[in-house]
Image (cartoon, rainbow, N blue to C red):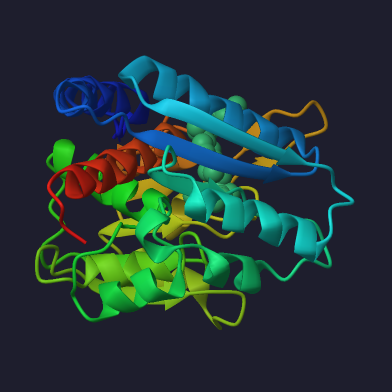
Length: 287
Ligand SMILES: Nc1nc2c(c(=O)[nH]1)N[C@@H](CN(C=O)c1ccc(C(=O)N[C@@H](CCC(=O)O)C(=O)O)cc1)CN2
């Protein structure tokens, strides 16, 4: 079997085309959505992701607000930028690019953000709203993955899903989304403390690999026909992406997300969705 491709690039392009029309409608009402980004330090990966986010904004007509601080920025300096974006009426929503440099209290920064401007859905208030089944901006990579599966006709309802990883951007929120009534999946969360990862993987209809361990998911671990989403972004010596999924998995799986070109573009598309939805709520005078 050769797996079908979960094409994130094409799916993101379709989402962006829909958003372009929604942004144009907002502009007719005198509202221009604006995405802010806070980038601290010079990590080349983070710089690339943030640049991609602003390229996407330009494509769909969202205004860009970019704040950059050196790796030596203090907690107070970063918090000052967060406060400034909280107050800036041109900024509909914003993100603080993660990870932040060592020594910075990431949680304190996230908590300081205005939850109504949280374009990543990672503010504790919004994660809480997700737990309570209340409307909230959805974390970008997890919801991007669900959209990718839905748009390719992969059955989520009733599926056994194994999520590998427990980080704040993917692993933690992913099961919250998958177990909502709209998805109705059964989720097992695996992590570095899991005793027998292979036995869990082998039962999975869908695997979300977000461990950051190159080629962790091997062909022999995967049930034939399963959908496998590769979220891992390790780099080899030349800077090329090495995912969490071994290339041989494509011979066993029914569906596979390429990496690059799978989950990454979906993460960026979902971010734009969150910004446009926030602008639409503001335009309608809702929350
Ligand atoms: N505040 C946040 N920080 C981080 C998040 C996040 O969702 N919010 N997720 C990741 C990084 N990330 C988003 O910021 C991200 C990762 C990958 C891509 C992407 O488009 N990747 C391309 C490949 C790019 C390359 O060649 O390096 C792809 O997969 O095709 C976009 C965004 C951690 N931080």
